Length: 338
Image (cartoon, rainbow, N blue to C red):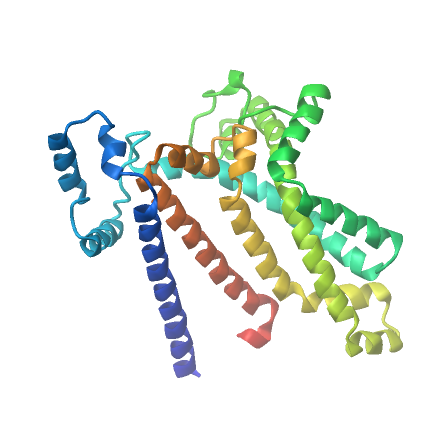
């Protein structure tokens, strides 16, 4: 048993290593295939050839491609992700500064999406081909079909400009910017630590609309997948047997059918959360949300490849981590996988 555990661990570690190496190669190739001269991006178009050569030697752009790759990997292993051309700061510091805003947005979005999506999916499966099922399927179809940037703009027009029910762009109103010390980077937590309830509720007011719209897209996906999983379980013979033996419909659904789809839902929700973290580019642009998505967009526009390559690498690492978390949760929800 112990040797089997060691073998399984070694296999998993090997898979992670190969995946990370492949991710490094992919990230490096993306950076080199982009039609952007990294040297010109630093020194500008008007610099002379001597300056160009000096900077090229300093950043290794004049080396053969394989040496550039080894230098890139060596820098990463030493924690050097390069310096952003746009901000002049180490890229990792920039990302640590903007990432809390995106995590805050994506976390509330996935709570909204999964918190409503799973019950709605179960309800749709139980009420299959009935009016409730048709309504839920129609709403999820809309969530899949509408571009998120369009939904965001319509939401701003209706709920902010017309009804004045929520805050506008940004994480907080201009009046409250800088009033709360940046302790953790998470504005809601920092405002609670500072005991400033005005900033807290203003931040919540600004978070509601973008998180709901971002969560609506994940809600549509989670609802449809939950419905599909539940329909598969409800058609199994053990459900019929449980009903014949006198178990209530509620107990059959939640204690038997739902228990058997929890493992599948863990993967669906984890991947949806990862998608929200790296896919919040459009919603952050529409709402002027100073997060990871807006950071990578701004740097792509000016050809800041150090920042872009690090962001791509980080997205891959996030998905690897979420898959590892899913594997760990499998063992909690399904003892047969231990």
